[in-house]
Length: 70
Image (cartoon, rainbow, N blue to C red; front, top):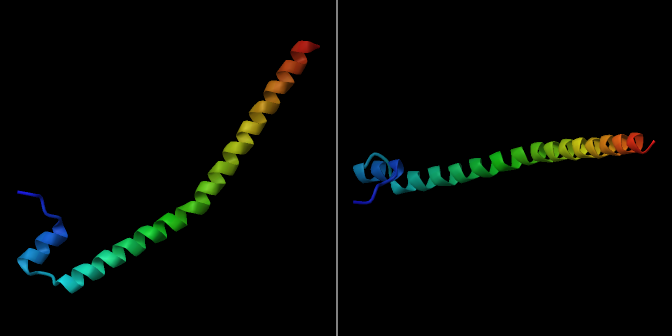
């Protein structure tokens, strides 16, 4: 027997209608999209910080090499 999702179980039991189930699914999809859009600016900030750290690391390495040459 295949496992049923909670929504499918509620539908089979007659506790919700197919119309209500469809509405819940649409709402869930909207929520996922909104959450993804909200996290995108945060990802950009993290990428910018990582690039800054990498640039500092390269500069530090160049300074160490310059001191070694002298």
